[in-house]
Image (cartoon, rainbow, N blue to C red; front, side, top):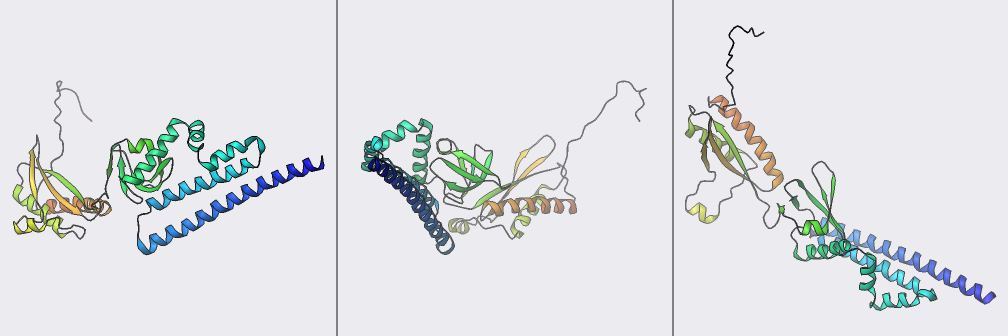
Length: 286
C-alpha cells in the first residue's frame, strides 16, 4: 500500500515538474525571440514575418512535447505519449482534435509566410473596405491595425483566398489622381498649367520618370482633359509620392492649393444648380 501511494505521488510530482518546466521553457523561448526580433528591427531592419511565425510554431511544439512527456508518466496514456514523442500520431491527433477550418488556417498561414503576398508592416486593403498595417501573422489569423488604431482579425484561410491590395509589395511609391471640373467659360489651358505647377511645387511630390522618359522629353507632371461633362470640363493631374502615407497628405494639400489658385485667377469650379418653376403664380413664398 505504501509503495502504491509512493508511486502515485512520484507520478503526480513528475507531471507537475514537467508542466512547470514546459511553461518555463516556452516563456524563456518567447523572451529570447522577443529580444532577437527587437534587435533585428532596430539594428538591421529585417523582415519580421518569418521570425514571428517561427516563434508561434516552436512554442506550439514545446507544449506538444511537454504534453507528451506528461502523458508518458500515466500508464493509461503511455502509448499516446510515446506516439506523440515518436511523431507517428501527431497528424492523426491534430486531425482528430482540430476542425477542418483550423487546419485550413494553419496551412494558409504557412503558405502566406512562404510566398509572402504581404509581410509584417505592409499596408494592405482587403475587399476594398478594410485597410491597415499588418501587425502579426500566426497559426490561425492575421492581425491588421487600421488608421483608427483598431485591430482587424482575419483568419488565414480567408485572407489567403481573397483579393487584396498591397501598397508595399515591391514598390512603395503611390500615385494620386486629382480630378477637378471647371466651367466651360474658364481658360482650360491655364487651369491645366496651374494644376501642374502646384504638383511640381509640393515638397512631397517625387519625379516618377525613368531615364528613358527623361531622354524622350516626357514632362515631370502631366495634366489632361479627361471628359466634357454636362456642366464641367473634367481635368486630371497625376501626383506621385514615395509611399501611401505621403500620398494622402499630398492629395489633400493639392486639393486646397489648386482650389485657392483657381479662385485667385478666376477659374470657375461649377456646382449643381436647380431652377424651380411654380405652376401657380398666386402662391406667396416667405
